[in-house]
Length: 293
Image: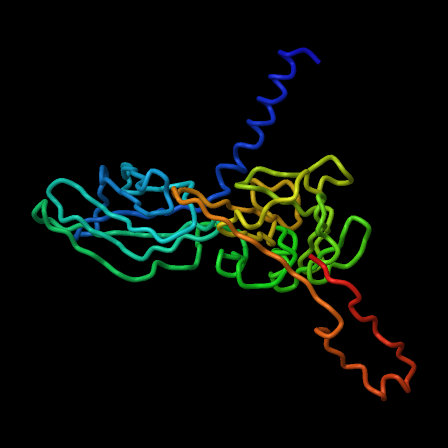
């Protein structure tokens, strides 16, 4: 393949992936009105958060008074609405998670430029603008819960989820799919071969099998959160399986080191093997023989 043909191929792949990447992050959207209920175009809307490298993201409402701030990192935001001749309105405590669209509407009243109305309180957590059904596993859960430290095992924290390894072994506690190819994830009977893993919306699928196995083993320690979309049916989704998206951490000038290890032995394994079960012919359950890391 010539250099020009190779360049065109990479360009085509990038264009095809753009919709998925554009929708891999959350957004804040809404409408701005005045006290009479009329829409206000030209309002400056600023979303501020320490999770943004640029600290603030700014848009302007359109002719219908609507705005949308896209590609937002997970975290807590403050949204400010300003327009000359109106009192500025400030909304605090806006929590952004997963790929959901958080609705934040505002009402501006005529007043002095130096006046600001601050509204504190959580924004609605129900996403009425998307058909996605997803489970968001935040950093706190990733640090606290014992699992196999891969996106596939993190997806197992979703109710009804299961996974198998490349060789068909059932995943239990991260013992069977800690490998470069990961595993096949299923929720409520969905096809494991249709599952996909992405980083910031960019697929990590390899050419092995049906494309469900990843090309790399993602470092879950670098994730701010993991979103597990199990509803299927979105325009960006070509398959009906579980879609797991790893959202990396961003920003900060501090150097940090983390360490994780796991292990077990037979003395840590519980048993409900009773004499009654033994008399009924149940064989002795296997015990843990060696530690796993």
